[in-house]
Image (cartoon, rainbow, N blue to C red):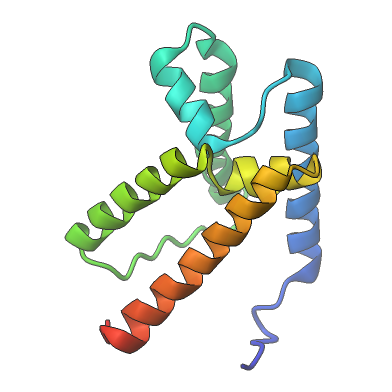
Length: 142
């Protein structure tokens, strides 16, 4: 494996990680809520506390827009057919239901709280991702 040193951005990655950590910590400390995207979206559809959930999602949508307006290139590139994207989305949704949360909820918030359940879920997410990449690239040749 080779590192593309031209695309290696440790400082912006560190700043982004610190911002994600600060946002997740703020949400749990100030609101008592976990910053898991599947829980935020699911609660938006069935919960009465929609204000903070809408603000959270608006921030996710606004961030790349603000980055683009500030002169940063925001390139979105998806190299997959629509059917594959739909199937992948459904499988991810199914996985978050079985795991009781998503990678942001378990991987960022759960691991920082030293949750054994989140550790198992995160290991399963990573393992399933590795197996999927292997199967799609090396077995199916896509």
